[in-house]
Length: 96
Image (cartoon, rainbow, N blue to C red):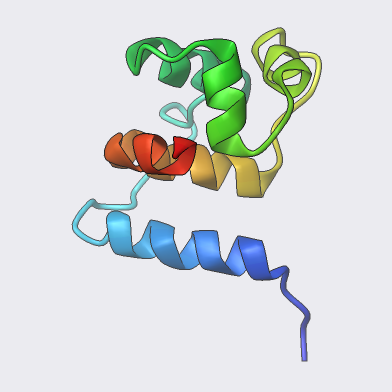
C-alpha cells in the first residue's frame, strides 16, 4: 500500500470539492508559473507578505523566497494556494 502524506491527501480532496464544476483541462501553454502565483494571489487579495505567510503556515522568509523565485513551492503549498484563490473567504478563516 502506498503511503500518502495526510495533509496532501486532505488538500487534494478539498481541491476536488472546490473545483468539481470547473473543467480540469489544462494545456502546457496555460499552465501557470508556480513562482509568480503567490505574489499574484497576495496582491489580488490585498494581503501583506506576513498575512499570506500566516495563512499558508510558513515563515515570511519563505513567502519572500517564493516571490523572488529562489524556492519553488511544494505541491501541497500550491494546492492550498489554489484553494484560497477559489475561495478567498478561506484565507480569512485561516488567519483567525
